[in-house]
Image (cartoon, rainbow, N blue to C red):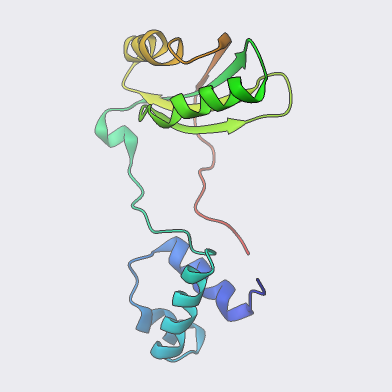
Length: 152
């Protein structure tokens, strides 16, 4: 899809604050409210805008540890990968899962209240996933930069 400069400006503003009124976005970029609304609807229809979410501060909910978990499977057959990925979808404790090229087959992102909570997640969630041969947990000491959106 061809993204115009105005589309880029709309996307930047929506990523920063998706609750900003369309009239304000249009005013900021020199576009009428109705034209801005049409562009947003077109960006949604084409899938450029995949959805809208609230950013939650996990630390304020008591989740104080971020963990990146490297998983190696005992087999990399298509069936093994499908079984693993299907199981991942059923685990809300796993925030993200990425199939990797490199030493680990997958990297998971999780959060825990404390180390004891993570030990329980490790035992009851990670080790129960099908085909897991090796687990390497990486505790995040400090997040230097978190995603605030995609630059177009």
